[in-house]
Image 1: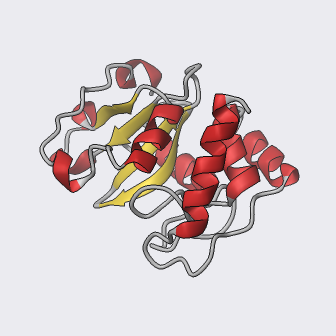
Image 2: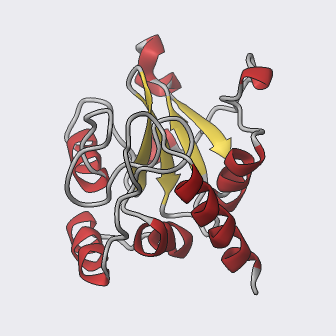
Length: 178
């Protein structure tokens, strides 16, 4: 079993065992047609690990805090729109949302975990606009989606109570990608 397969098995087990913020049950996985429609609408492909989360584990509803947003249709347990809808809305907003940066999970207070679909590692970024300055709203949450998922599974993410006060590095590419 590859490292990716082992990680997916761990995520699936945790997803079945926990329900973030109001989900009664884990949504069914998205089918390949839904993934293809989402990618066609976005104009780019999802990183393989992110696609596998949606097509093999569930169409959102698992993961840290409020869990992953649904991919193409529906709303999250917190009423947030699906990933594709949110991405298109943010790209059309005044925030200068970077191309290929997909919001996958809502943290509350307008903050999102986002996957940079243009990086080989699927780097995870934090969008935290509460300071009001779009030039200082982006931070590197994790160097890869693999590391981000592992920190969730291991309980070592910046958002864990024992890590309160951790400073994330600023993401510098936001200015060149808007």
